[in-house]
Length: 290
Image 1 (tube, helix red, strand yellow):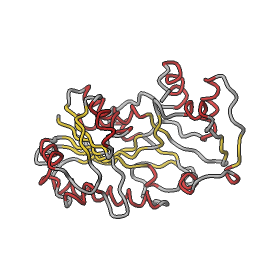
Image 2: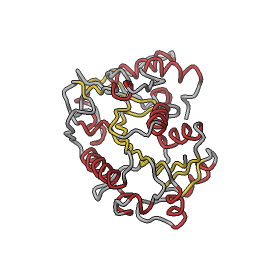
Image 3: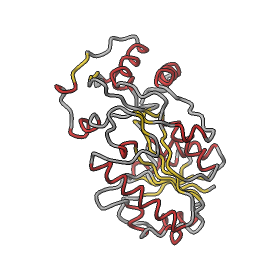
Image 4: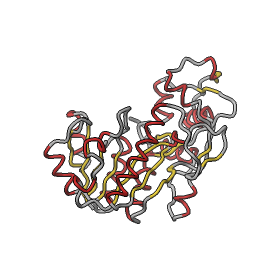
């Protein structure tokens, strides 16, 4: 397996770790020249990619790739990799056998706190989720034309080492915003890596919700992190009175419970299926720190 990860950031690096554990060779892209060494230190062959041009070195690496992961968010003009390749994957990835696209559960939009599955129609609210739906469809079409399986991983709120409630509490930025009835799903970043490895190993395509078992009110997660730290949680604050950025406020406009039954029914087991045990593990081993 020769895996190429476009956008080897937080999730991409977790995917790379799992791929390397399975014996794969991994390469990845970053927009920042300052991050090239950080990727190399993780045994990820680093390449610069600004979303606007493909260097000769990057094109040569793409030609060797057997497994592709696209983690870069689309923009108003579409998916940058599909635009630069004209959607012709086989022309740029002649050895490609499988591909994955990292999307978001935001594509489902608001469902009033009801459960959604991969069969639930998408009705995105935010512009970024509208762009994700378009990118999902474009990748599905490109994969079909290339004759390869394409896995779309719809991710819920990502957290893990270095990005979690403990960090927010220690930095004094944690808030307990209360909007009655509001719940969110979450996903440990390591489970994103493990799910990608599982789907690649089985050569599976299709749409998969990659999320925990327990959608919960966000203020409850903050309270649990504070309890584990032995400190008082921040006071509750009504959502309506909170000073939030337009993007942060938009997240609260989508309320749903996301099912992960499809990938579980295929035999995948989440290592961190609910936030209490996950936070306890992070706190106990000290890996919560940035």
